[in-house]
Length: 112
Image (cartoon, rainbow, N blue to C red; front, side, top):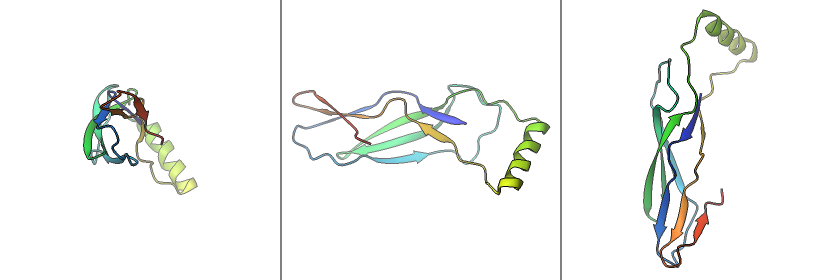
């Protein structure tokens, strides 16, 4: 399951403010139970930059059907053969937070 950002976010700071790399906190529920519908909110991305914080909702990118017996068996066999645990959800930000300068309104994109 992949998560995407639900909206574009920006932070307005005063001109000349020293801007460091944004700090990001990912808040996800402990469990989500299928079936899940595309666009359902499934967590939050909290971004802090220059002393300001923005909360960005995370949405499910595509419908996730309930697993049937065949799917469960396939996953179990894969984990047994490759000794892998299930991977946590991936977060794909469609809209990276922008940092706006209050004086000249120019946009400074997050370099990461």
